[in-house]
Image 1: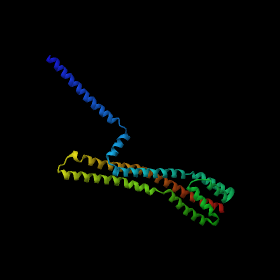
Image 2: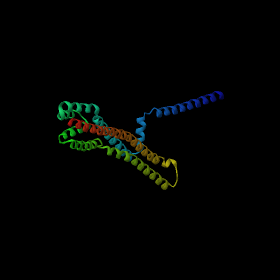
Image 3: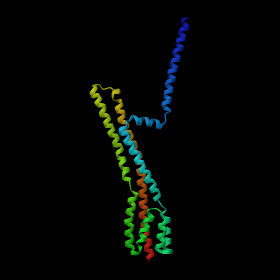
Image 4: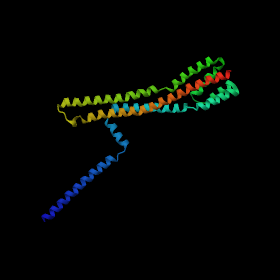
Length: 242
């Protein structure tokens, strides 16, 4: 009888241990099965709405500016070699007016600069060159429009994160001073909030910095193309005047 009772007790302990282990495994699997967005959402909520909301606003506004600039710059990119050939052929066959018509029918800053230079071609090469240089500056300003806002968001996001960190650490030390006892559980929440704001601020800055570098590289490419095309236009006008 004692042997049977011992066997039943052992079996019960085994079943309880197996159940506990299974529950632990299920909990671990549930944690592991959480998607990245779910984990990100939870961490964002734990970081607190005060600074995390502002950091998120910086990310949204920065991405809006970046997307708008990328679309504009891609539309501003043209096949300059093809345009130069068309303008040169139009100058040879129909003169300045034919070349201006080609520029009117072509989108992009290079075509606009060509049109301004051709429009002043009748006043001499010097006037045409001045018009090209002046309008080139106008087009460059259009290309760089709103880029300064993107750099501002890149600078503000980590600063807000660091400010949240400082405020969280201050709150943690205030609790220590009030209680008079250094307990990890007492200040863990404040420290977690402090670190999460820094992490999200840095993530925002990194994302926007990637877009910023791409936009700057795209602008530099278009500006170099504009300068090279402007020189080619003056050469074409000089050859046409001969």
